[in-house]
Image 1 (cartoon, rainbow, N blue to C red):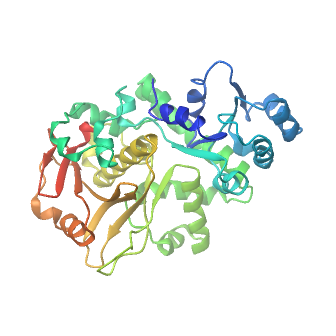
Image 2 (cartoon, rainbow, N blue to C red):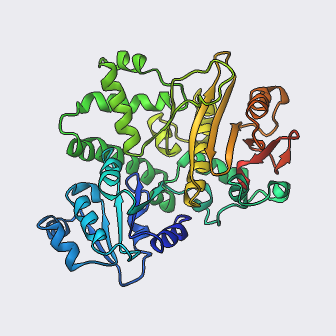
Length: 406
């Protein structure tokens, strides 16, 4: 199954000495490495022999293997990063020499930025997007949203999936192995073991002093907090920990790629805005496992249904733009008066506010906050993503797009 990030990986290898693939465990990073040409050598830091071969003397290893080396789970060997800097600096003109991957480490980005700044390009990977799960190419809608194609052709973009296919993906999430095997029993056991490995092996290895029982409760709490404004004091009180510890827990969850932190958009604010962040569990299947939702009926009846849909749509937008190599930042917006925008994207394309609805038809009155945001900040247009049958113009500056067209 083709990943949309692979063309970006090929492009960046032609421009940079090193490329880093970062993402949650079991999202497909190692499988993507196997798509590299046959002359690339793959080393896995979770294999004892590979770890010892590099850890014994990283500088010597990279002198003996100066080109076409891929190192999986590189966060398990922090000494690798300064050695990579030396190896790259010894031949700065060469491109496409190294690929590293990493997961489950909030310190990974700081290690890369400190040792490899200017020498490495970063690709943020996640589990399958909706399009990848059904083996579709990237949607032309993404190019329009990124300002790389004219938005006036949007109405001609067809919905590429049925509502049933969209709902199945939403319920089950995008982790590759359970998606491909498509067995309810296997999916349940896989997610159960996945969480256990994350909590009992990965995090203790990276954070020896972490209170595992408290953090286990925190992960369960994330399912209820997904899609909510985060108040660190309330979370700390519920867990019986200090507020700095609660912040650290969110930092660990975001840095290990299971949680997406969305800061508040505060720029050019004409009104008082809520400054608390918002966040989502990145995979809807993991969220529904934690909420004990077994089927569509359970999902549609659950009080967190709207927040779950919102988080899944946001992830698909963010993953799609990231796989296309678009430079952007993601925020949420809420004014003191309660006006809310689910997602605000700011990047090379300008400022793009996005409202997310599960319904097919959108009440014009519910889009007042989106209209005001577009007008006050001079946005090219605003986007509404819902379950309509086709894209349509909702207003002179509001465009409705069904998720099935993405």
